[in-house]
Image (cartoon, rainbow over all chains, first blue to last red; front, top):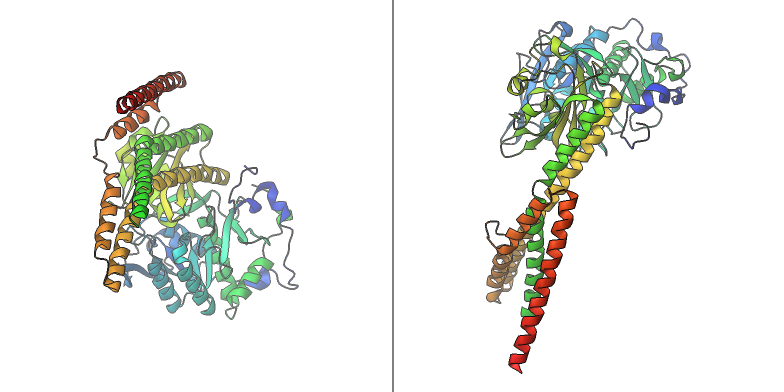
Length: 277
Length: 276
């Protein structure tokens, strides 16, 4: 596998390759205890921009405070209240469950931007994210991205808008060749999967574009209709980092996205001391 | 001017004919290539099934086009909305994923499973991506020697998906050549008409352009029963012959071509003598 020319964003975080991640961010006095010790996510709102979140799923634990979907009416995005908390795939519920497990007091907003009529409609995504920021989300988990050059400008604008509105976008890296947006923009936190079965282990990769590796292999996740499954993919790694960002925000509400990213790097595991799977 | 447009027309007709001949001779080669990709996928993963679904923009459905493996065949032809199931999710987000322990949730993927008669325990789905976005999904179901797929499996499936995307792109480029020609010619005619209106001169220009378009497009008529198309279709059929048969066909064509060449020379020299 290593001999193949793969866009393997997870590769630096897995197996023997991980030992090369020897870079530690030198913030004396900063450790996990300082960064989020005792924090449970209270006071922080996390947006799950995905396929919807099942409100009553046990793994979500009643933390969903609002759910909307974005409809397109004559090409214009309209944000519609979605009190039922429909999840068309199960994936958004999986992400919400991961965030809730690590940051149980964080409040969740579900922004459903996936569905037959919305695929590829960057404007819906933009409107949904804007709604989330307007409704107090300071961390947003995004497990979707686009390769469309046409949407580059729009996604870039959204990423900047979020950054300046003090909202941290946590994006799953996309294992396909070439750039994908917004996961490879520098202002977002992009996440690939590592193969250590521990939700509290994450790594910092000093060789961008993908800067963080989190638990994303054989993750037991919530799925739709109250179900669960075991899942592998970068899109299950991202919500782990989103949850940790929420914990840090919970303890240090004044932090900006770049300070948050620095703290995530400073408190990442030393790859040389973590055993493999 | 007339010379130039005649030469241009000749050239365009030549391009159009070759594009159409290529299209006819392609005769399902993309499908065959996609099939070989899912067959290789099944073998490499030792999977129960692998399949490729492509998005059909007209119906907005993901249609399973090819499949391989003992449990794969039932899915071919099944069309699902792009907001349903794992394939739909991967298509919508462009995110690869693997799920295992699927049967613990009996509701999971039941829609498609009911249509295909097979419910997997584990599944990998990766997007087929070209420069315009996601065009389809490659799925691999149930590794025989393992209850789950690893991250490396996901990445390896991604390599096969890239091959499939290249194959799809190649077939689209071929199709697009004819469409592109038609568009280019039509816009040439439009530009001619615009220039004419602006200058208020050369009454014949628009008509000439329109004539050029219709003359060149005549070569694109798919229902045209010209002998060339008949030949192209036979050649397409021969593509499926085994190497020995193919050698024989090439030899036969050689003989025929030499014969045609000879009789043309003979006819030409007879006519030459008669004119003397």
